[in-house]
Amino acid sequence: MRHQSPVQLPRGRPRGFDVEAAVERAMDVFWSRGYHATALPDLLRATKLSRGSLYAAFGDKHSLFLRALDRYIAIALTRMDIELDHRREPVDGLRAYLAGYVDRNSGANGRRGCLLVATAMELAGRDADVDRRIGSFFKAMEARVAGALSRAKAAGKLADGVEPSSAARILVCFVEGLRVVGKTAPTRIISQATVDAFLDRFIR
Amino acid sequence: MRHQSPVQLPRGRPRGFDVEAAVERAMDVFWSRGYHATALPDLLRATKLSRGSLYAAFGDKHSLFLRALDRYIAIALTRMDIELDHRREPVDGLRAYLAGYVDRNSGANGRRGCLLVATAMELAGRDADVDRRIGSFFKAMEARVAGALSRAKAAGKLADGVEPSSAARILVCFVEGLRVVGKTAPTRIISQATVDAFLDRFIR
DNA sequence: CTATTTCAAGACCGATTGGTTCATATATCG
DNA sequence: CGATATATGAACCAATCGGTCTTGAAATAG
Image 1 (cartoon, rainbow over the protein chains, first blue to last red):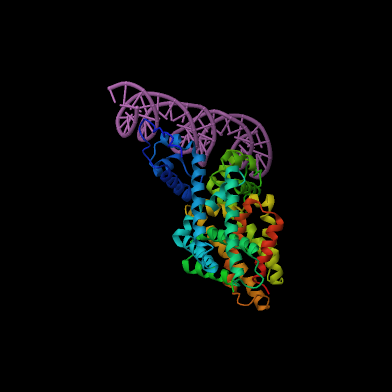
Image 2 (tube, rainbow over the protein chains, first blue to last red):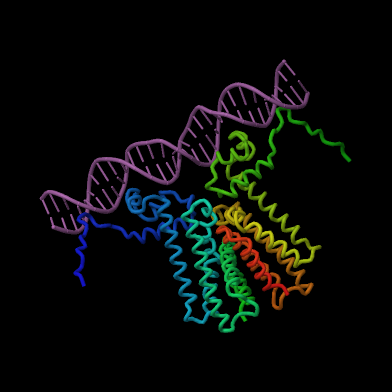
């Protein structure tokens, strides 16, 4: 093995802030205000960066937004990978997955909405970078749900006539609709009952 | 009967433009760009009004937006009232209703999105006037769907165990989710198949 | 006719937008 | 130490924002 290449440390003052943490703070702002309604001062306040530092680190508002969106997507997919882990009983996984949506779309949590849905509605079709991300996210989401449904079907847990791939598309629409309707802050009771009734139509 | 009160005509130059048509033009702009991304010049171009006339007629951007949103809601509810007319066979009505969503959420139509969903995501929770409208719209929509489902149930057309009121909530989430996913411009074939598979879970 | 009203066009307003630049302080290296 | 690199924060920029106001033409009523 070659000896370690000499990773010449930079000489000057070291980076004094956590870039990823700043992305996450920015994500929070975009999340609760949307892209257009977020002004530079909002981002500066949230990231606690100066204008100069922010532009040096991220380029511009749009680039920072894409970083934040990517972070949001990564978190969402990671959560799905845990909830729908293939070593888990698939119906339990689906229940856990939907329970997460109940959580995120009831009451005050619901008001916060979803950065992805908000971005899709605000920017999709007008921003190619966003288009790609939204499209591939929905694909990835659908694939994971379809996988869990396939496993459930193999275990004989699906209702008669349920086909995993089309059921996955239905489920994706349903949960994204939850995020929209969640903006009117329905109670947790109602949300949970709706999700339960939904799942009842698909599992045995 | 009293004789007609003397409707003193105004003296000056008569109104030279159709206010409702202007609202509809403005609605189109807000629809395809969203609230924040719509600038005054966009509205002036679309309505063919001068700044002065627009402000005289509508007050400000926000008021005009609310008028446009109300118009959008009125159109949507009118369409539902036709599609889900209680004199019609309820399952046919639901099919027609969902067919409309397939139409509006496939390909290029899908890209356009939905003014209501976009507004919900962009403004709900930060604009009380919008909140009221969004909330009451979803309520009205759910009530109409629940009505059709009740009639279907009475006619023995619903699958076993389907309860009209919770099924209505599910259906509202599903179609609003269609509007979100429609932003990625799925094909009409896929959308139609998804809707068909969805309905199959609920009707006999 | 005059009085009245509405129209378009554009000048104008202060505030804010996203973005750049620069001087200065500070921290870490060889 | 001196060289290097990064931070800050304010000054600055042109452009645009939503909104007001004025001007002058046009159209109707009495």
